[in-house]
Amino acid sequence: MLGLAMAACSPGSVGGDDTVAGDDGLPELALCEAQLNVSGTFAPEGTPPTPDLGCVPQGTWTVTMAVADAGTCGDVPALSTHVYTVTGEGRDEIVTYNDPATGEEVTVGVHSGGNGECEGSFEHIWAAPEGYHVLLLKPYFEPGTQVMLGSGSYQLWSAHP
Image (cartoon, rainbow, N blue to C red; front, top):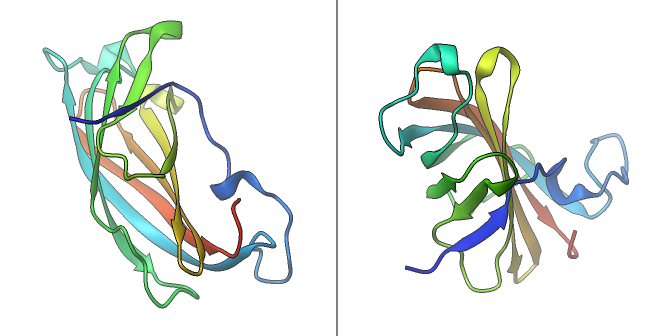
């Protein structure tokens, strides 16, 4: 199995470019944007953590997405399930995306949100005939649960973000 492992970090906005082009609020290079609903499951490495432990992200994050609002995009590719694995603790924590496509850039991060929830931030960038696809997924789950919810966005950029 081919995997992509990275030390945990937290990507910011989609594509990381804050240059705004106009009234639509999109970055200058973004051609369109769609909003996504995110759902999924968390499978801990061992015994599921109890709510009093707060965020314990170690395990497998299975994230599924669906279009909430196609916005200005006619077609939203890559609507599938993405699987990430979190191992280690603290500075030794590693988040692995389990199925990177050839040439796909992935930036991943997991952190503790308010009230002990675990939050993920997973950005995927890959080439398209008309530019670059940029997918940002923001799943989370409450302490003591294994059900994920969240949001995301898809953008098509005219050049590499």
